[in-house]
Amino acid sequence: MQLNRITICVQCIEYCDCFDNFIAVHGSAEETNLPDKSIDFITVAQAFHWFDRSKTKIEFQRILKDSGKVILVWNRREEENELIKENEELCRRVCEDFVGFSGGSCANPESYSDFFKNGLFEYRVFNNIRILSLEAYIGSSLSSSYAPTKSDKNYKEFIDGLNALFDKYSNNSIIELPMKTHCYVGEI
Image 1 (cartoon, rainbow, N blue to C red):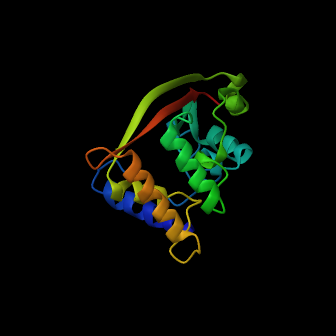
Image 2: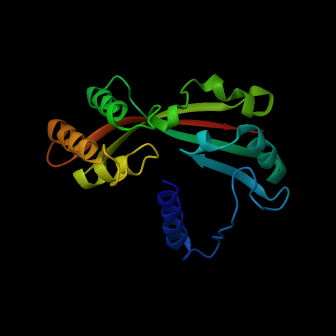
Image 3: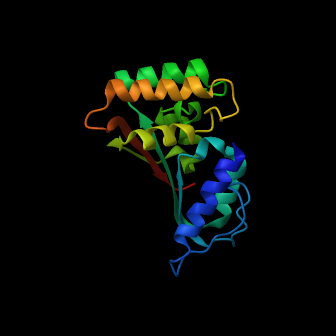
């Protein structure tokens, strides 16, 4: 799976390379290699659950300017939707590393209060419907860290299950995944 994340990062860097103010640095959330007090805002989308929270907080405090803010963003599936329920059942059945969508991270805003200064942050939720073709739906599903790879015994069952869900829930060759975007903004 690591290779997939590296490939995606390389593609993102190549895409952004044409922007004059874009600079890629080798680092991690826990050790960015950025100068002290050099950043106004840090945005983390869909990845916070991978970080060592205590080390990341120390690093973010080091690189943020005074009054700088951290923005955490997750797109979470609407759990009560029948498509989402069936998609989760498929993942639990055939994806050995599946612990829940978004890495099993909690949707409860209070579970992030320890990361923010004095436990204070703004929390907002926005509707976000993902509209996907079959190719995009399967590609998105395969890009998840828990997805089986082509060499895994459950790969074919996973692809067949995704195709069946798409056939059942698509309309005019698209599928709509109802989601909510959760945003947490605050100082640390």
